[in-house]
Length: 261
Image 1 (tube, helix red, strand yellow):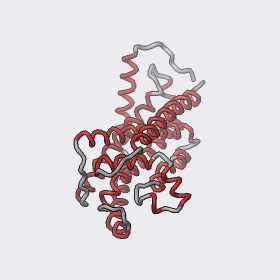
Image 2 (cartoon, helix red, strand yellow):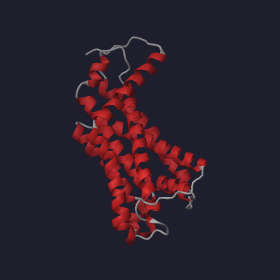
Image 3 (tube, helix red, strand yellow):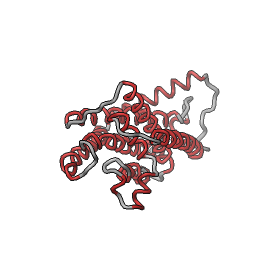
Image 4 (cartoon, helix red, strand yellow):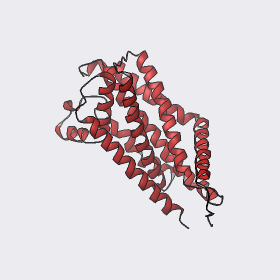
């Protein structure tokens, strides 16, 4: 199959991307089961930890205040794993092949999936915060601190979403793409999301303190609740920005290899 390669104005590429973003968002709305799971499951986990385990965990503050930032990042992991499977589905069901027969930039479909992932995660975060407030979460952040926390979360969501897109391109099937993205769901459990890292055994503590999720959680927690941030902010930005660059470049290269004729 020969792809259409006619030169087109830059503005047309933006229109292509906007069209495919709209497609991905519509698909998200129609897939009610996945949308509900990406929202309901993190909320259920938060309620489980707050009301079942929270009384036995000492964090120096109300447990709901401690756990909310970790639950938000858990939401991101669920949303990103869905993105990986959506990209793999488009690759294996002929969507990309159909786009290549049209005068449209087929790579825009990746941007569409990433933007839909960001929108899905934003909705999940709003729901989690609403439930957290009902459970007693009382942040002390000022408006600039809320904006800083939102900016860091957006950077992290973008990084994880592009990584998920790369994994979707790498997967041999929709199922394998979902399996490869499993670590996105598991990584927050090996961080300071649910318990302080100083309560963990030595080897596990070293892993928890030297992976990308922990500094992001500690920074968001510090911005929202006033706990010490220290060097976590710098590490959170470095981890997230570095992961975003690597994931974006990797997704672009993989897409070029997978669609080369």
